[in-house]
Length: 246
Ligand SMILES: Cc1ncc(COP(=O)(O)O)c(C=O)c1O
Image 1: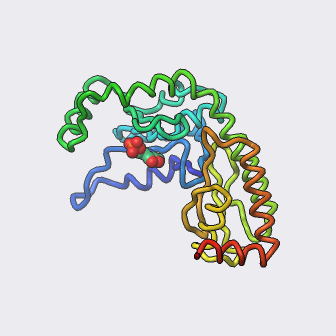
Image 2: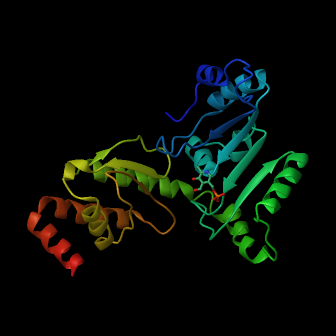
Image 3: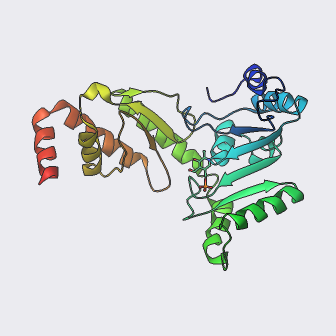
């Protein structure tokens, strides 16, 4: 899950054809969000790199949550970046800064990236103030990601026990994908119930819940208990949703 197999890459590259653009770049996301935050291993990354290089493709690693992958695999971001020409990491997700992503690569590529950033209006002056939390992110927030992975597992276990909710992914990082269509609730009911229980969610019925800094095991347990109660008691649910309307 979340891994583009070498044979699929070969097939997607296709033969040279005057009618089509030449394939020049392979983008890999690690861990893969839509596949449920599944981290790709070094072997998988190497296999894709080898195919890419055999076909003269550059490789970009979208590592928005690369630190989560490293923690989940017991590795580090440096080695997970080995099979890529450029790597981006996002510091504002699990690492908790207000803003900021970083891109790394060979000097000539970074020069090019800076130029494009400017052309697209992304340059900033006096950015030091908003970049300062990055130091905290990189020095203090990485090792604690394991807590988010543990709370995500706890959340998945709890949701899995609720009739009408299906957990769709094996939880390896901080994401839990669910399908709540079995509850028979509208999207608005789901959002209102979650809001009442202190959780901000988006509509589904297939939707994603993420754990992060500030969410403790106790919060998960309270959420699961509250949700279970509301699923089991139609009258409680009706009065809560009625309150939400007024
Ligand atoms: C998988 C993935 N890649 C890239 C990005 C882009 O991050 P940023 O907007 O900080 O550049 C995001 C942001 O949500 C993401 O989820």
